[in-house]
Length: 76
Length: 147
Image (cartoon, rainbow over all chains, first blue to last red; front, side, top):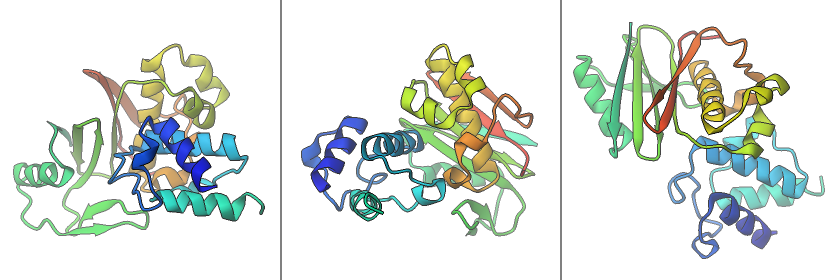
């Protein structure tokens, strides 16, 4: 799951996957703007078939948060 | 009252300091709403900041306000997620998409909910209290009323 999420983030944000780790902060390290974040959420939903409620988006601050969200919700 | 301050390649704290100085704000203590929106503790002025690709804008007003700036681009996946069917039909190019994006963002920033509000719940075709305009390679929108 970790590798899949990192690949998705790298592709969506057009950044080198090698620069992404679980500790990577989306805003501070990858300079993600709100448009990027919504694009990332949409890509995530399409790829993993998981709907992320709008109220949960603000909790996705690090790559680790997204990995954890995917792991928790994919089989929920 | 509504005023805009634009700046490039500075951090938002620096711009905010400049804005408060220009607006003669003495007590710059900030408090935060439930979704993190900052306010002056004194309530003497409302403000809202946005940045995109190094371009910043700060709007100040005597009433609740939301502002958004975005470099012109087109993200079809985002359009599918946040636009109503009627809005989707109006998108012919990147400018159309970006205009809708900043209008929606300015609305959810004005009401303080941010993305938690759900951008798909903002119908820009029915939105009366927001306006958008082009600023170089960017689009800017401001929304005045708390709704």
